[in-house]
Length: 425
Image (cartoon, rainbow, N blue to C red; front, side, top):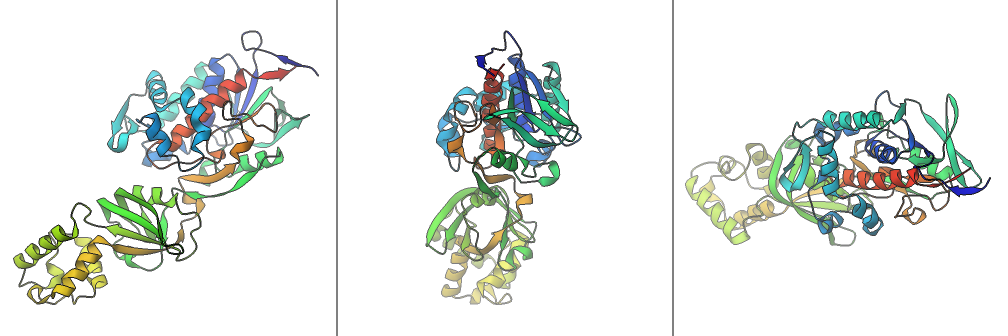
C-alpha cells in the first residue's frame, strides 16, 4: 500500500468513533461537518448516558472563563491543552450549543447550564446534530481495535470486523461504570502500545475516620473555608472557599470534590481536613460575637445558646466536640472554654480514611500518557490514524464545567484531525 493525502473534498475519509458520550458525539459532529463518513460505536442502547446525569441532571457544559482562568483550573498537564483550547474554547462551546438550539445561562462560579436545567436537552441536541450531519450510530460493543503495519484500520465488534481510515477512542474513564465507562479505552490504548497511568478517582467524596460527619449527615454548609493538610509532610495541599456537605460516610460537595484532586495517595489517616465555619470573621471579631451571644443567653444551658451562630443540626455534635458540658450555664463558661470553642469554630478537623469508590468519582485521574499523544491533533504518536479524546486521556480539572470543556476541546481537535488525515490507498 502507498500513502496518499486524501482530502474530504475529494473522497470522504471514513472515521470510527468508539464511545457515544460527550467527547465522542462532539468529535463525530466536527468530523462529519468536514465531510467525513462517520460511524459512532456506542455499547449502551442510547448515547450520552453519563452526560445525562452530570451536574445532578442539569449538565454544567462549560465554564464562562478566560483562557488563564481555564488553565488555572486544570490540575495537571495543562500545557498539553494549549492547542485544544485555542481551537475550541469555552466561548466556542457556548456558541456551539446555542447554535444547536440549547439556550444557556451562567450561574455562580461562571458555571454554564442549559436554561431548561435539563441535561437531556444537551444530549438530544448532540444526537440531532449527529443525525443531521449524517453520522451513523451503531449500538455495538467494540472488543478491540484493528491495527495493521503501525496504523489503525478499523474496529472489531461481536458482529465482525469493520474497516475505517481513522479511529477515535472516546470511551471515557472508569467512573460511573453503570453508564458504560468501564475502562475499555485503557485496554485499547495498551494493546496499541500506549502507556496508561493507573486510573484513580478524582472529584470524589472523602470518607471520614470517625463518626462526626455521620452525626450531622445531610447538612450543607455555604461560605466556609476548607483546607487539607498532609500529615506526613505537614503541608497544606488544598485550600478554598465555598460549599460542602456532610454525609453518612464523610464529606462531599464542590469544595471537597475539588480537594480530592489534590490527594495523591489517600492512605488511611494521611490527610486531615480543616473547616473554618466562620471565615468572614477573624478571631477577635468572632470572640466579640461569642461574648455578645453569651450575654444574650447568659442564663441558658450552653447547648441552647448557639442557635444564632450555627445551624441547628451542627450544634449538639459541635458542643460534644468542644468538651464543654452541654448543660453548663452560659454565664459559667470560662474564658479558656470560650477560647477552645472559638478555635473549634475556626478549625473544625476531620481525619480522612480514604476516597469513596472510583465508581462514584465524577472523573478519573490517570489514563493514556500524554507524551505519547500529539497535542495539536490528538493523534497517537505510536499508531497512525489512531486518536484519543476526553477522559480516557490523563487529564482532569476542578469542578465547574472544566472537565466537560476538556472533553469538548480535545474532541474537536480529534474529530477534525481524523477527518482530514492522510490515509492509505
